[in-house]
Length: 226
Image 1 (cartoon, helix red, strand yellow):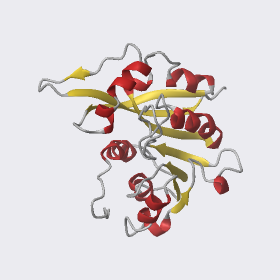
Image 2 (cartoon, rainbow, N blue to C red):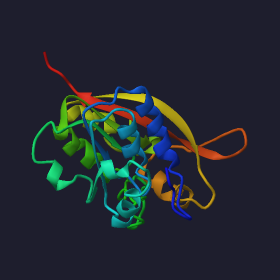
Image 3 (cartoon, helix red, strand yellow):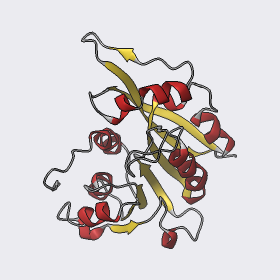
Image 4 (tube, rainbow, N blue to C red):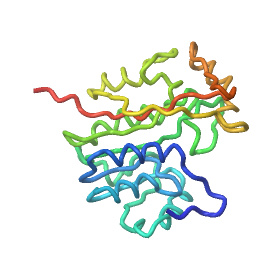
């Protein structure tokens, strides 16, 4: 991977990449919010996808993703809001959909790669609601979600698991990772807002006194009715 000067290493993306390494990757795949490195799209390609589509709302990120690896030319890259319109005209289009979506709760409209709406869940909800239609019968939707967004435990909201069930998807947490809250980062900046929007959620401290939360890797698939 080629990272631009003063670019970033997508640490959260690496957590999903670890999950992709142990999955059976095949068929047509979609990476939503691929970012300037296109890391998950490249992982899908490297691990056996026959076709990879990737999207990002930021056209500058797409421009950099086109040159992020020596195989980027094989990826169909689209600058759009979550779902490329040219890829969504039929049901069951994708065998695997992956996303590390913007999901930081903020009281104002922040950076495109951080802002997930005032409660942090807007992109996640849209991906679940529309992504379900685009999954093939045995397809998998893989999402990275912060635990304070009411993923499998409710903090003032319907859980993401409950939402998925209503949409006919079964859910499974495949991995949990501790994420240290960096000084001066977006999470620290918005802790007060997060606690206001997620009543009952408590940030924990590790043995070194650092606040942290958990990052969950979630796998969703169709509830198959026999």
